[in-house]
Image 1 (cartoon, rainbow, N blue to C red):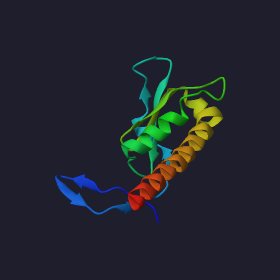
Image 2 (image 1 turned 135 degrees about the vertical axis):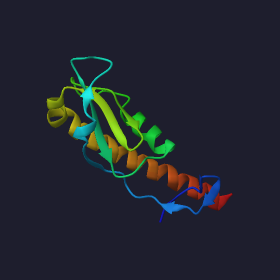
Image 3 (image 1 turned 60 degrees about the horizontal axis):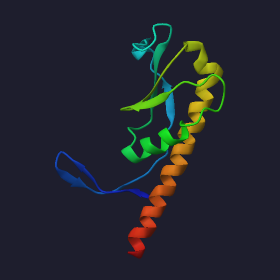
Image 4 (image 1 turned 90 degrees about the vertical axis):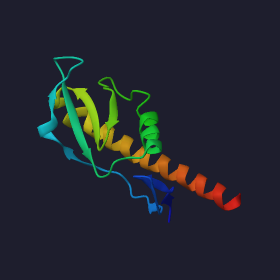
Length: 124
């Protein structure tokens, strides 16, 4: 079993916890607003099953670095959400599937980073 490294919460050290894949749960419609960057778009918030660690966020950002289709929007992590600015219809047509693939890739890459760190800790 792979464990997330020891964390500190409110100055207290807590035991490592097993990593569970992060999933997209749903679109938080109540948080959807007009984009501050482009008034033609909406800021869409997709709720995640957990707040990702900084390393997981790095893995997610790396998967989003290269566009894979002609309708590509930037997406980033904000707490327990993926946020993207797009037309609402684009989520179902394009971005929902892309983001699900990116979350799965981030989980895979994060798990690989944990395995590598665990192997280094055991050998060193």
